[in-house]
Length: 112
Image 1 (cartoon, rainbow, N blue to C red):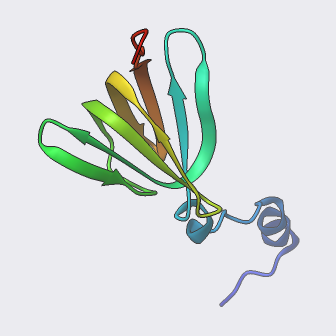
Image 2: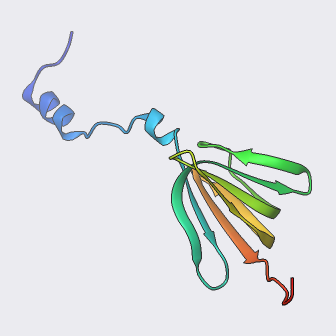
Image 3: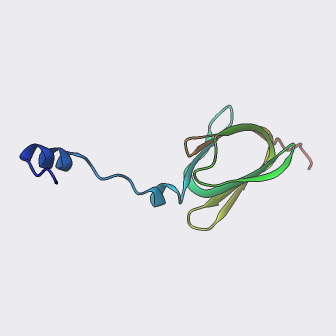
């Protein structure tokens, strides 16, 4: 038997609808910064980089992890474009559908 008392109806109307899992599964938020400033702060479709075991991709809802990374960092934006960031050393942290990258930008030598 279904309880249709006013209290039950009030409680049901107070709850806001849940966010669709499909919406969060389509993107992942990425921040990339160096010691001086924020270089990138957007939602993307995926991220690629490499560490000492090889090239890897990070997709939405990826497992939490942390790793040292080497250049490049490739960001596949939601509009389909790619942005590549070159750096000398970096650290990447993935947690709760967000990616945080801390990098040292490559410094070009004069005359090269």
